[in-house]
Length: 80
Image 1 (cartoon, rainbow, N blue to C red):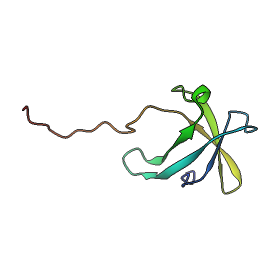
Image 2 (tube, rainbow, N blue to C red):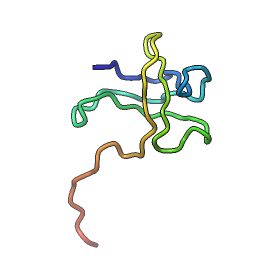
Image 3 (cartoon, helix red, strand yellow):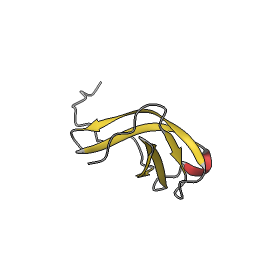
Image 4 (cartoon, rainbow, N blue to C red):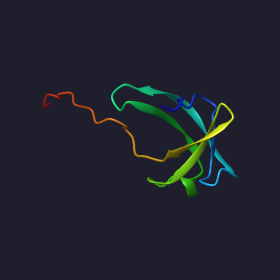
């Protein structure tokens, strides 16, 4: 299991060379059984499926840009 990226974790390109953004919030998801995080990246790197690297505890970890929400909501909404 990988450690979750927390706030202010640096986001790098797939090569781990150029800083492209920063994580704003992160935790471990019990539903997905893996770490999740939200953050800001430049427009050029924001396409869904883009591979990035996160610098967590001075080690580079692979990550991927995905569409939110991470988990589909399954609540009932009554028609108005």
